[in-house]
Amino acid sequence: MNNLLYHSFARSQAGEFGPALYVLEGIMREGFFLAREELKVPWRDPCGGRHSREITQTQYRLCLTSLDSDAELRSHCEVFGPIGIGFKAEFIRNLGGFPVFYLPAPIGDSEEDGEDRLGVSLVYRLTELRSVLERIRSLPTGYQSQIYSEVQDVQELEGAVRFLGNILYFTDYTRQKDIQSLRYYRQREWRVIAGLTSDHVRVQKGSSYYVLSEYQGLPIHRFIDDVVVHGTRKDANLVDDVLRNHGVSIRTRIL
Image (cartoon, rainbow, N blue to C red):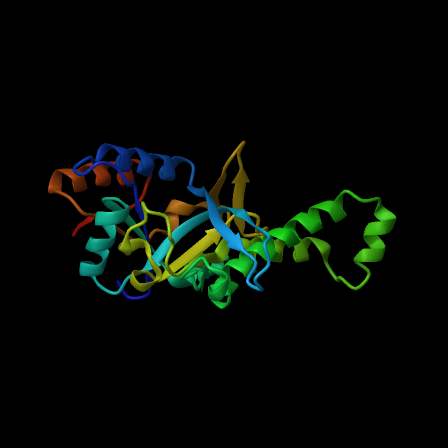
């Protein structure tokens, strides 16, 4: 398990293995879907102003977790899904993967608690900046050239802002449905995000999604380093059948 990052799927009702097997088939055929999440955060001016509203940061990303033992991996699969696929950390870095940048979550909601909302404020400012860049893009070329006169590469600037928006997450996400296992104190999360361009990595855009499909001209599943199942031998055999049908020589480990 040394130096591996795992993506586990698919969250479903306890004892249901079919949905995870269906996702595995899709990964083998198409690649990894970069799931969309709307990060909704109530924002209050940290300087004590009256302006407040809920902000939304849209993220498209493949989430992976660094795990040190099969015991940790078993617990992880109990939360995120019974099938886990492991990749070497070096490979995920080659895809542009990056560790999540965790921000302190707000403790309170009064003006006296303003300082603890600096993390939320950062997400808010990034959201504002993305809106500003989109407005600039709609201006005549001459105005754009003047505004960006000191910018070496405008596309890289816009990409950097999108990138930051996709790797930010809160130490304690405050929605009622969130559980302790999803929080910073239990995870070492990495992400591969949409919007990056490379001669080596192919990320295809669908109507409302992205798919990480290839690396250096080969299907992403060719680079899998470990496959685990938190289930029975029958479950593992079903996974092995899918892997074998797609030319993957690795055999499933039962946790």
